[in-house]
Image (tube, rainbow, N blue to C red; front, side, top):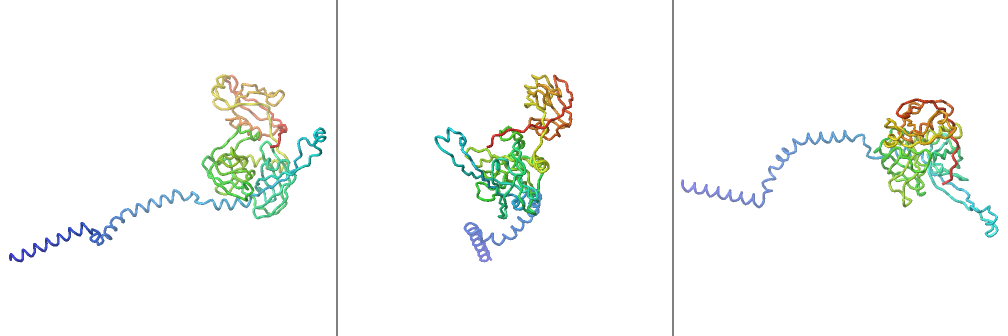
Amino acid sequence: MRRYWLLFSQSVTVILAAYFVVTTLKPQWLASRDAPAVATQLNTAPATANTTNASNTSTQHEDAPTSFRAAAQLAAQSVVSINTTKTVRHPYANDPFFQYFFGESPNRSQSGLGSGVIVNADGYLLTNNHVIEGADVINVTLNDGREFVAKVVGTDPDSDLAVLKIEAPNLPAIRIGNSDQMAIGDAVLAIGNPFGVGQTVTSGIISALGRSHLGLNIYENFIQTDAAINPGNSGGALVDTKGELVGINTAIFSQSGGSMGIGFAIPTKTAQFVLNSIIRDGRVTRAWVGLVSDPLTPELAQAAGVKASSGVIVTGVLQGGPAAKAGIRPGDVITQINQQPVKSVTDLMATVAGLTPNNPIPIMMERNGTAQQVDITPDVRPVTNRTPR
């Protein structure tokens, strides 16, 4: 019996020693057996949570576009390249003194580059006025490679827009969106022909709205974007993620001549007004009231003795103009025009421009702390004399 007990104890000792050696030097030999069971236990519980999280993520981002391919393909077919040619004469070509010493100065040809947008299937195009200003010949190249000579239907230097016409049937007109519904942070695409390399699509977001006081146009209400806009993009399309036109690319802020992430586009609300006016009347007719205004600051409000916290303060009135005839004086604060709130000088100019000349409208204003209403009859805005860019 003692011999069996000794054999048993020795066997147990050997087995424990072997187990200790294996667990110390080769633990994977023991883990491999139990791994499937452990893995099953570890993966079973979190599976439902992971599935739920994936579902939530999918739900949150199902509306976020992963590609702008559809919008780019839809809008790109409506964007054209514009090449212009104009004859440039020496500024002193007609000066007899210059001709006596230097003789006749030969004319030289100058070419220009820009973009445009087909806005009507009958062949009407929108572009910038500065793209075609002074051009003798305007050549338009469609996205499919066809080329046409365009004629100018009308221009509006005050907004830097122009309407062209080409003779071609069934053109792919772009869908015009509502620029008033755009917000800062919305994704946009800029389409045009930068530097003449060919049609190019760039993406970005709307960086700001209502940009003005840039010294580019008289009527400024720009959409600012960081989508790359370069020379040659002028007159091209700024579109939303549905491929709808929300602006006409016009200018960039740059110290090098290339894109620095600050580009400006004319909203479609302005472009549509100019387009319809030119097609209907051959020109743009805007109303005018003959006053000069500044933003209402707390200091100006205190100096004028008014209680209004928003509006514009009148700083000048043209003698004999509509505002003077209505009794408006410097120091008055205008808060509404034709029942439309006026919060800035840009609002005032845009609202007045859209009025019908010779049609009386009400103006709400404040003078010496007292609110009052006056009726004013806008006149037709005089033609602006501009120096070509």
